[in-house]
Structure formats: structure tokens, C-alpha cells
Length: 84
Image (tube, rainbow, N blue to C red):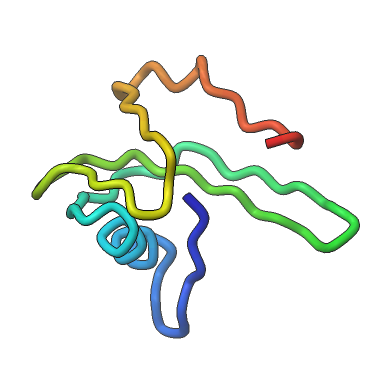
């Protein structure tokens, strides 16, 4: 999920807002997992991932095709790669 951080928002607040808008549920934002930077011909992209916990509702996909849940401690099997 890509997010835009609005003026006066922290990245965590923006993520919480975007999840609510795009997935119709509420999450608790946890620790940062990773931060990667990719440089493309059109600009620089920062990808930051956070642990999130569903605290209210269930996911309703309004903007996305699928979701997956990964338990804390199992994130080493994930890869954020430039071709994504």
C-alpha cells in the first residue's frame, strides 16, 4: 500500500488513515520493519514497512487485489525488490 503523508502527519498516522480509507478497518501501527530507497529515472522512492495489528473490523479491499498476513518474526522471508 502506498501512502502520502499529509502536512502535520507522521508516517504512522498516514498509514493508519490510508488503511482505514482503502481497507475499511482500523489498525494499530507497530515498530518499523524496514526502510529501503530506490532511485528510478522519474525520482526516488522510499519504501517503509511497519508491523500492523488489526484492531477493529475486517479488511474490505476497495483499492487492492489481495492482502496477506505475516506473523511477527517471519518477515525475513519477504523481499522488497526494485521490480515490484
